[in-house]
Structures are given as C-alpha cells and as structure tokens.
Length: 557
Ligand SMILES: *[C@@H]1O[C@H](CO)[C@@H](O)[C@H](O)[C@H]1NC(C)=O
Ligand SMILES: *[C@@H]1O[C@H](CO)[C@@H](O)[C@H](O)[C@H]1NC(C)=O
Ligand SMILES: *[C@@H]1O[C@H](CO)[C@@H](O)[C@H](O)[C@H]1NC(C)=O
Ligand SMILES: *[C@@H]1O[C@H](CO)[C@@H](O)[C@H](O)[C@H]1NC(C)=O
Ligand SMILES: *[C@@H]1O[C@H](CO)[C@@H](O)[C@H](O)[C@H]1NC(C)=O
Ligand SMILES: *[C@@H]1O[C@H](CO)[C@@H](O)[C@H](O)[C@H]1NC(C)=O
Ligand SMILES: *[C@@H]1O[C@H](CO)[C@@H](O)[C@H](O)[C@H]1NC(C)=O
Ligand SMILES: *[C@@H]1O[C@H](CO)[C@@H](O)[C@H](O)[C@H]1NC(C)=O
Ligand SMILES: *[C@@H]1O[C@H](CO)[C@@H](O)[C@H](O)[C@H]1NC(C)=O
Image (cartoon, rainbow, N blue to C red; front, top):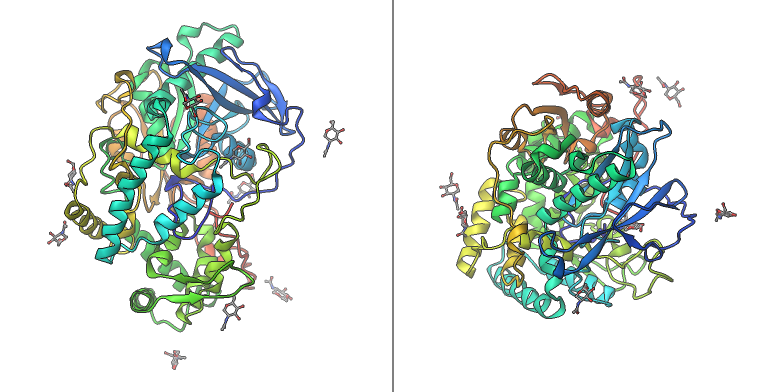
C-alpha cells in the first residue's frame, strides 16, 4: 500500500498497521519458486511457506497460456488442519500475501486455529502474474505520474475537472500501448476460478476428491465482491465463507460506483460526536458546546481552504514546497474514516489546519510523497516499489465493468459529480476521481468466459456469513448482497470504520472462529460490541487519567 497525499488508495481495502517483518527465509525471492500445477510449498519468511500455483490465463482456452499465482501459507499448530482459508484484503489490487505477512496475529485471532491461513495475490497483483504495470520498469515514473494526476484534481473547479477527465482518457490511451492482451485476463471472475483451482489442488494434495473440493474464504471490502463472485459462479463449491465490509457488487460490475458513500456523511458526523464526547482528549475539541458546533468549525475550515489553500515549505519534510488544497484534506479525511484508530491523529491534523499549519499533514505523508529515485537492492527487499496497486485496481475494475462505461462527455462527468455530491456532501465529489473515470479509454475486453453473468438468487452448498459495521463509509451493502444467497446470515458490529477489521471485538472473533470451526451461524440480528467504542479514549484508565495512545494513520505503510 502506498500512502500518498491526494492519491486515492485502495478504497475498497481494509488496512492493518505494519509491524516490522523478520525476513529470514529459506526461499529469498518469489522468482525462485517454480510455478507448478500441484501445490509445492517452500519455507519462506520465517513463519510461513510459499508456493506458486500455475493457472491457465483462460480456463476455457489453453492457447492463451498460463501464469503464476503467489500463495503464502501460515500453518496452524493444530495439525491436521481442517483446511485452508484463502484471504483477500480488497482493492482490487491489494496483496493477500502482504496482508497475511502484516496481519497474521489479528487474522489468527479472528478466524481461530482450526485452519491454515493462505494469503493469495490475485492475478495481476504483487507477486502473481501477469504484470499489468502501465509503466513497466519505471516504478518511480509511475508513482510520480499517479501522484500528479490526482493532486491536480479539484472536483469543485470546472477547469480542473475538464483537465482531469481529459487526462483520464490519455491514461487509457497510454496503457493500451504499454500493456499487451494478457491484461484482459486480469479480472474478478478469473480470480474466482483460480481460487477453485487452489481448492482442487489442495484437495489433491490431501488425497481428497478434487471434484468435491470446497473453498474456505475470508474476504473484506472488494474481497466481498470476489467472495460473492465465487459463490455465484460455483455455488456447489462454497465451503465456509465470511464476506465482510460488503460492497454493492452490482455497482462494481455496473461500473457506476454511485452509492458506495451512502453512509459517509453519517460516519463523519460520528467522528465529531466521538471527538466531542472525548472533550480535551480529542485535539480538535475547542470549547465547543455540541458535536454540531464542532462539525460547523470543520465546514468553515474546508470553506476557508477553498478560498485560500495553504503552502508548506519546510525543507525538513519536503523535497520541494507544496500546496495543500481542500481536496487533499478531504482525501485524508476519507481514508481516516476507514479506520477509527486514526481518529486521534486526524483530529490533531485538523486542529493544526485550523491554525493554517499544514505541516503535520505533509509530515505524515511526505515520506512516500515524492519518489526518491533509489531502487531497492533487489526485487525481494522491503519496502518495495516494484508493485503499484493503482494500476491493477484500474485494470481489474475496468475489465469487470466492461461495456458499462457511460461518463462519455465532460457534461456527464459533471452530472456524475453532482450526483455523488448528493450522496455525500463531504466526500462525494472527490469520489468522482476513482475507478470509473479511468475506464474511459480502457482498451481490453475479457474473454466471454470471464464476464460475470450477474447476481441472482443462489443456493450455496453451505450458507454464507456476511459481516459489516453499523457505520461503514464506503461499503454498507450486506442486506442487499445477502439477499442473493439463501440461508445466509448477517453479523453486525457496532462500530464506525471500513470493514469489521477496523475494530477489535471478542464477540466478532468468537462468531467468526466458531463459524469456521463448526459451520454454526450467529443468530440473525446479532450485533457485536467492540473493545474501544471511542478511539479518542483508548488508553484512558477508568479513573480518568488521560494518556491517550496516539496510533499512526493506517494508510501509511
Ligand atoms: C536465518 O536463518 C538461518 C538458519 O536458520 C540462520 O543461520 C541465520 O542466522 C538467520 N539469519 C537471520 C538474519 O536471522
Ligand atoms: C508484496 O509481497 C511482498 C512479499 O513478497 C510483501 O513484502 C509486500 O508487502 C507485498 N506488497 C504489498 C503492497 O502488500
Ligand atoms: C505480455 O505481457 C506479459 C506480462 O507483462 C508478459 O509476460 C508477456 O511476455 C507479454 N507478451 C508479449 C507477447 O509481449
Ligand atoms: C468557553 O466556554 C465558556 C462557557 O461557555 C465561555 O465562558 C468561554 O468564554 C469559552 N472560552 C473560549 C476561549 O471560547
Ligand atoms: C506547525 O506544525 C509543526 C508540526 O507540529 C510545528 O513543528 C511548527 O512549529 C508549526 N508551525 C507554526 C508556525 O506554528
Ligand atoms: C450511467 O449509467 C447508470 C446506470 O444505468 C445511470 O444510473 C447513470 O445515471 C449513468 N450516468 C451518466 C453520467 O449518464
Ligand atoms: C440532489 O438532491 C436535490 C434535493 O434532493 C435534488 O433536487 C437534485 O436533483 C439532486 N441532484 C442530482 C444531481 O441528483
Ligand atoms: C477479549 O479477549 C481477550 C483475549 O482473549 C481478553 O484478554 C479480554 O479480557 C476480552 N475482553 C472482553 C471485553 O471480553
Ligand atoms: C492517575 O495518575 C496518577 C499520576 O500518574 C496516579 O498517581 C494515579 O494512581 C492514577 N489514577 C488512576 C485511577 O489510574
């Protein structure tokens, strides 16, 4: 995950903070693991084993060739394991391998120890092939390009919208020349089919019949789209699947992304309510007489930034002076409402912005802001700039919505922006800078077998468990999606943030682990409490001692 000011990150991704990796591996590089059609695990990354599964690019047409799917496996100490759970953190474009490497402890807590956990990089992602990098061999140019493209976009400024809409077309023209036809195979139905290939290869390695192999799965955010895609394409192959942080997958395939933000403003209001409740433990609190007062101060701050952006020119943090605009702050706020543990830091940044000091905001993001132009010593080293998630997100998004693109003129772009503004007055207009517009000149057409036929009422071999927070800024569609699957149940978590992983809850963990182990679903209507309902008060003892733990922003990896 590359966290950079102004660049929309993996919007449909959930994110864990990054502990240091201890990278002592027997295998030192994915390239050293041959791609095989049966699973062959090699020790790697100290606690894990790695494999490269060979899959056909088109499962219906062998002549298209093959590619490799990278898999990282944590083996439970309780062997024999009941099976493997495939993990997907979202995106599209986020790395399952990276998620498991960083989030192993949380994932084990959540899912229990009956199964092995497998982080899979879907095709086109990180360590899996094929590469869909529109700037091959030029990672710094690529990162610089994406940062320029987005930091120049101010949806409130007609001329900038015009420029951005034009630039998005240029991006499509460019990728059409730098990518070849393998890009058409990088899409969600194909990845769902790869997961079936994995389940079958696993069954074979366990001496079980391949044709009855079922998939066990935990996917969050865009991972919910991947999960429901699998459940609709291969209903009889559904093992135990948890679908969390639920995206409206019809909007994903329809390419409209028009209602994702339906809870975004309520999430913002919640931010101010929690801040108000915490009083002086929240840095943005300033003698306000209500949460609404505070929210009005925020509105005034944004209006002020629209009139007069702030320049930051501190050479300690920057390679050249920068300007912070209202839209930059909104991008920051959008990511902040993903993860309540970032609320305290965000409140601090807002308080400083109110004093017209944008240094903290820059300081938090500048580390990765400008490409330093220093190549890591090898492709296997960390941190790596080898993989750019934005490119894969656009290719997967545009392949999946093939044929639906309809922002076909500048006037339609403006209509789209006003519509989104209505859905969320805070975050709607900047949402117009995400996936659909990049599909304007998308040049690839997936093969017929990789075009999703649509959702309809489906009976799966085992019922699905859906889960989501009561307030999720961008994915709150569990009811809609669960309706497609007979017998599925929704678990709600009483939390604000994107995906159930945004908060810690023993109740959620108990239900998830129990479901994985026994197949028992929670009672319909279950709502789980979380450990820290007010993130501003985390670390404050019951006696009222105020030692607030300031956790880092979640999107800075
Ligand atoms: C890595 O593991 C090998 C063998 O287990 C050991 O000899 C070596 O010291 C380890 N290196 C590091 C950096 O931990
Ligand atoms: C890609 O995989 C490597 C391990 O091979 C991991 O260290 C890195 O964090 C992953 N990248 C992302 C963006 O997660
Ligand atoms: C097409 O792109 C893929 C992925 O980058 C690459 O492996 C392959 O060699 C390319 N094929 C041709 C014919 O250029
Ligand atoms: C803070 O609120 C109190 C009570 O409403 C008021 O008397 C005081 O003037 C306020 N202080 C500031 C700095 O606004
Ligand atoms: C702005 O904030 C930064 C970071 O907190 C601080 O170092 C700096 O002194 C502030 N500048 C002014 C003019 O207050
Ligand atoms: C694009 O299509 C969707 C779905 O049909 C429709 O709701 C939307 O209004 C269209 N957008 C534009 C800008 O024409
Ligand atoms: C936005 O909402 C207002 C009031 O509900 C409505 O009049 C207007 O037509 C809406 N605009 C768009 C673009 O949907
Ligand atoms: C949650 O579980 C942890 C570890 O099992 C335990 O230490 C903690 O007390 C539990 N918290 C609640 C609120 O039950
Ligand atoms: C609060 O902090 C003070 C000073 O560190 C300490 O003496 C006191 O015991 C603490 N109170 C509680 C309830 O933790």
